[in-house]
Image 1 (cartoon, helix red, strand yellow):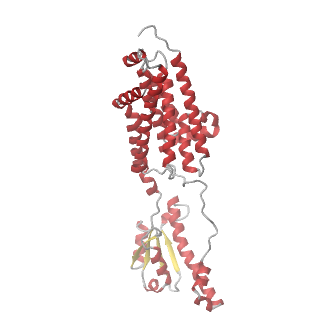
Image 2 (cartoon, rainbow, N blue to C red):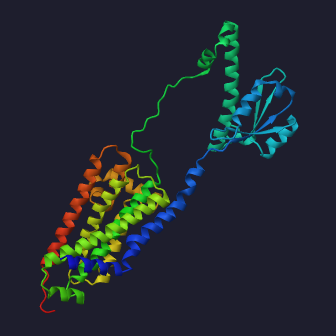
Image 3 (spheres, one colour):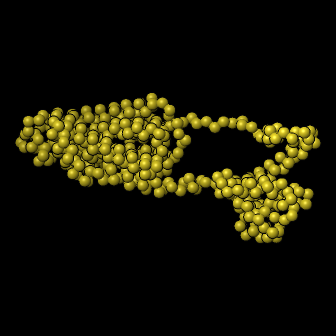
Length: 395
């Protein structure tokens, strides 16, 4: 049986067409997703608000100038893109031309003033403009509030100003909230598409078993006819054949997974080992699906691969692989018809990855793997039923 296993393995590796869907397809799609999703984080990044400051004598003498200068320091927490101008006329020109979103200045009494661009006025701004308006207003409001608090402290007890810790405590709002995560990793919308991609790629691995099972059938291939006349029984032949199919399918999935993790940079919550173990279960499911389809009587190989393609594409529709509308459809089916969703083996593979990404424990992962095992057992039983009923009058 070892010789049969090695021979089947070599024959499968020579069929280059088998690796188009099992290996090349997930790697190509993962690369496409990488470029598609590359700009999502950049699109949500915050840009400092372009702000003009009237750098006259009043501005230079005001402590507010130091606050604005600090907020304009380059870095991850930069709020303002400060652009000094000589006078209010130049600032007005920059404001009306759209070069800046607001103008900061100081009046004769040392009080800060803010002039907003017409596009930032309430009722005439977009959500992004509303954020910019809120930032500019908060800068001025916070400074005025803190300045008033400082003056009140000086009037009530000037000795307090000599204690830096008490002054810092007075201006600190304190930590009244604590950020916690209810899931193992921070939710990211893009990982759903990669999980759905792996579900599709795993099921397309069934094509490997379809080819191999057809090679064992005397009426579909000369190799099957020779094996039927050999000394090795059908059970041992199928066992060695399916073992070779599983190894090839699992190897393709592991290579695609390593490419997605190391090259594309998809986050798997630090559970790459468990993901590979789950891919082993997915490869077993693929072999079972290929066995059930490959054992269908009176259907040639081309028709069986066509049926497999249609089935896999239909099941992948309900994992959300084809875009945001399909993702919403998949969520709707899972929410409104959970029993129907649980009958989708592609959904089971997706949920297996979700369980590792979102949950600390492995209980949900074990349940998903068990569900995949049930699917595989049922499909193997269907394939065995068809194989038992096949009889040949002559070879």
